[in-house]
Amino acid sequence: MRSVKVEEFCQQFLHLWSRATNPHLQLFKQDPLHAKVDPAQAESFIETAESIGKQEARWYREHPQELQGIIDSLKINELPEAQAQQERYTFAVYKKTDHIMIDRNFLAQAQHFIEAQQLSRLLPATTLTELVFMHEVFHVLEYRKNLWTIQRQLHYQIGFLKKQARLYSLSEIAAASFVQTFYQLENSPTLLASCIIYCKNPELAQALVTTALKEQTIHRSY
Image (cartoon, rainbow, N blue to C red; front, side, top):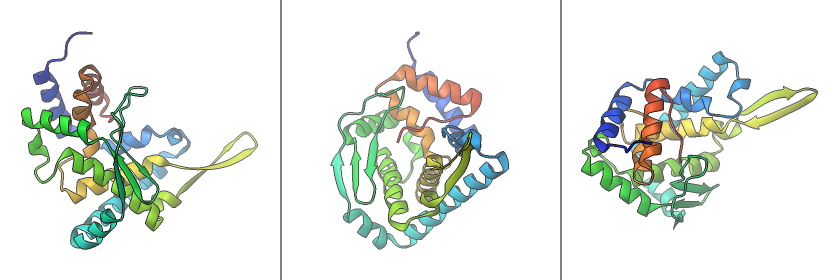
C-alpha cells in the first residue's frame, strides 16, 4: 500500500466533515439488525435517538452541577493501550452505571496530531479526550435513567422462533447527538474517529475517510 500523506488525509477529512449530511443513518446501517427494520421505522428510530441525545445535552448544559455530580460518582480508570480488533480501535469503554475506562495516552497523541494539522479548530471548546469521555458518560446516563435507547426492543422472527433484541446503534446515535449538542459541534463527533486512528494506523485512517467520502459512511470506534 502506498504511503499516506498527512496533507492528503487532512484535506479529505475536512471535505468529509463539511459534506457528511446524515452520518447517523450510516451508523444505524452498521447495526447487525438494521436489515430487519422497515426504512420508515428506521428513520423514526434515528430521529428519536437523536432527539434524546439533544434533550439530555441541553438539560445538562443548563444544569452543570448535576452533570458534575454524576461525573464525580464515576470510577474512571486508564484503558490499556488501544489495539485494533477487526479494523476497529477502542478508545474508551463503560461498565453500566459507574465505571469508565479511557485511553488518555492514545487520545493525547491524537490531540497533538489534530493541533499540529490545525484541525483542532473543529473542536473550539473541547478536546478529543473530553469528547470520548462525554460519549461514555451518556451511556452511563442512559442506563441510570433507563432511557428509550435502553428500553426499545426490536421484535423479529426467524422461522418459527420469535425473538427480540436491543438495537445498540440507537444508543450510539443518541450518544453522538449528545456530544455534538453539548459541545455545539458542526458535525457528528463520530467522524473524528479517523483522526484518532491516524496516530496508530495511517493506512486504515485514510481508507476509512476515502470509503466514507464515497459512501458517506462512518466508523464507530467508541
